[in-house]
Length: 377
Image (cartoon, rainbow, N blue to C red; front, top):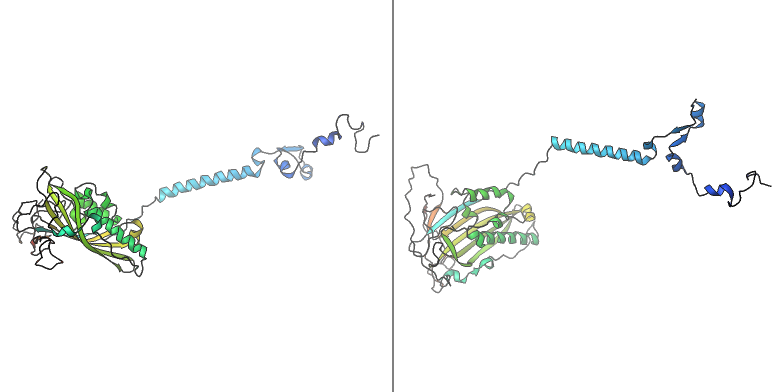
């Protein structure tokens, strides 16, 4: 006899446990019920007069995830539209270029009082004071680096090393010397000085601001070539702190070059001497950018003709040449600018001869007689 919970005919044969076991693995939890498309009205809704027994739910309301996705897409669209609107109304402004002091240039051509002596092509510095100078970058020595009141020792080393890089790039690098690529010099300058530097190359002028030879040593490749790859160098470098936020480096170097005529395959060599006294300003932004500000350049160079303009290239007087007569200057003519002066190149004392002047100035280019220099294109 069947029990109270069993079917009238009992449990069907071949089916263990009857029909209940068939759905025992199905669990109708709350999420399953909420996700159903067909939902039965509540008892209250049926009492209110609803004629239908069930209602169909819209697909978008089957889960909270659909609503969240819709909200997310809406927010993204609003954000994108806002960004476009703000971009049109307030375009991104490039940060202003940091202000840097302009370079002030003093250029003094040194003219010889006698024909330029020839030098041996193989050993051009033999018997010359520069014979004892170091060659190339080895001649630019750094002072002992010590911390200052507001800059660490590593920052001082960085400043001195960057200055040395500039000196090498601007006065020793063969590309720079022969009128070639000068990006090595430009890349070391602060952004605020790039416009002045570019103008000095494009339109050099003897105005104390735009002489290319104030930034670097350059020879006219159409007239002069290097007779020897060595550049003899000797000088000093000092560093001081200014105002708590700026380091100032002052360099004073004499450089000697062996040059010859570019138009002839052979020919005798001669020596050309440049003294560069440079003043650098380096702030914390310059340290971070591995760059310098060159704020002052005083340059003496010879042998040169006193009346020749050397603002774009140096055009040295070569072996056996004499300087041209200096053109007269009319002080009543206000159309010409009062610019640079000329000096007389002191005789180059042989290294094997005891100098008759102070040892610190023997054989160096010295402006012993100043006179106005005329401009010539």
